[in-house]
Amino acid sequence: MPAWTLPAIVAACFFGLHYLALRASSGRIGDALGALCLEGTAALGILAWLVVRREAEATPTSTPGVVWACLAGLCISVATTLLFTALRLGGPVAATGTLALGGGVVLSAALAPLIFGEGFTVRRALGVALGVIAMLLLATPSDAKEAPQGADGEEASPMPNQNRHTAEYGHDPKRAVGVRQREIQHAEVERERERQRAEPTIDELVEENDPRSSAEESEEL
Image (cartoon, rainbow, N blue to C red; front, side):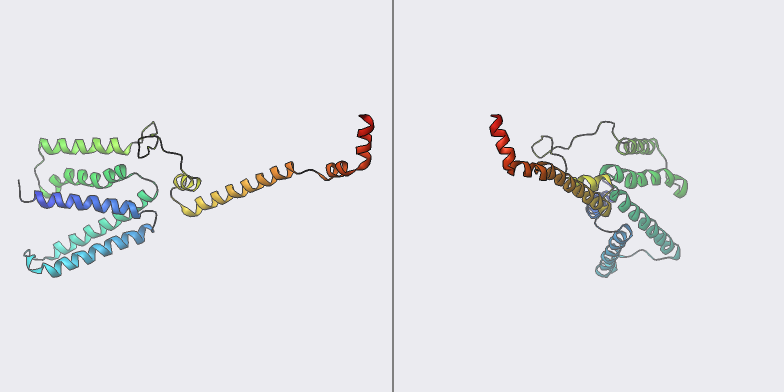
């Protein structure tokens, strides 16, 4: 096994945890602010690593290295902000992760031979093609909507109105709450109308309490 395999596998695990945490925070924080918190925390973690393992940095620092590293940081900042946006708008983890992270890997694998002179073998071409197929399969919406399943395998009950509206309006809390309030007001108006229909009118009360009406009914009997 090459020396780079183990660090790459560990990095893949942390990328998976990173993406799940990003999915959990989307919709609960602004896109740009979420990206700032993410990148700021990452910067603090890397700074702590430099302080602890400073002697391990044996590679000399050059101006092109700093420039390219800063450019990569700008790219990841834009990508992170857009990932927050995609997840907040309801994108599933499988589709958005495959398009953003997997798509970036496929794109870089295809361009690396042209930019860095890496060898482009049949094996690499097959990997790029399979990556494109995976992106198409996971990013294309299914024609048949799958019913949500509960923990016991049975079909789950419908979502509450508030959650349903939140899903319909792209996790926009203000809009969902406004729609929910209008529904509540409409329901209250309908209940008031039903109550008014059930209550006797003034003419009916007068007719019931009128002794002449009672006497006339007795005579008819």
